[in-house]
Length: 275
Image (cartoon, rainbow, N blue to C red; front, top):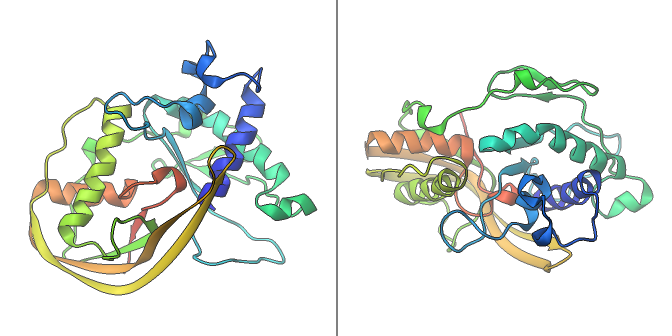
């Protein structure tokens, strides 16, 4: 659903905010202030030659298989807003609501899979931002990644709740690799939406114990690129550290919030703690 939500949201967001949907976004005089352009069209990052990491991430739940809810259901969808793009929260709610009126997936043609946003709550303040009618931006709280604490239990049981993308089939990643995957994602966001501060390297040693492992072959579709596949893993792993410096502890806390590895735009690589 990560690709489905991302693509559908973009389609209805552009319809809502763009005065000329036939114009090339790259040639538009107002694209620097356009949320659609920054999420879907901007090709140049502040650093490096790769396309920029995106300022807003939509993370729907990942079930790992086809699900059918005959009597409807409720889904909790996470939305991450980075840097000054928090000001676009009303645009995000508008685009998601318009997507809900149409529905998601192929069955929307039969007036199925429609949804409404009942409420939106800030995960940091715990306060309601949207009640189905009104938006309260004063309830939105921002977090500086540098201020995350360094507290971490040892051992720590990590749940890979959305697919983690790896270059090999070695899942779960060993302690050093996990911290590197978190660090790599973090650096992209710091360079693009933060102050470019350098991130230190973690020093760690330890063991990883696989508890569960699930392979997923995922498909994403877009009008420009068509259908493409990529592979990922979900599961649970227990990490025991013999050595872990303060940077490593901090990075683990960052990972529990920001995730690890590539394809964050599709909601991949997000983690949580397991009891």
